[in-house]
Image 1 (tube, rainbow, N blue to C red):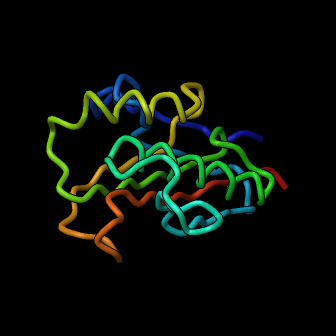
Image 2: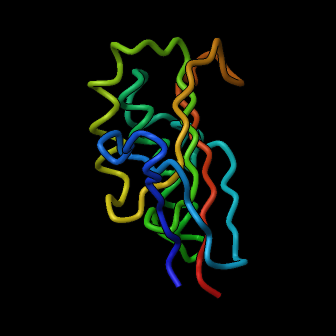
Length: 135
């Protein structure tokens, strides 16, 4: 049975921002994905050193991690995106990147957070996720 994204009438309708207010997991197979950065397998940043490029690579890494566990972005129940020095001016740039990654029929609960720094100075974006798949 698929996970269910909920948009309660008691909260604002968040689908236009590409996330669900609540996601009900319908399985006990839960996948926790550690924070993914712009590093590829060789710990290089092939996409570039700006926020949009790093976000694309981090989401690509999330997709690879999901695939390793037999899941896809449709199985996500939570997505947390951390961006160094985030300001709302970045939203028109990163919003479409997140939109293209997510399945609009199965939107996860989501968090977009500006942070002071990540583990290393060259890292500007880190994305962690939780997914649930059928048994």
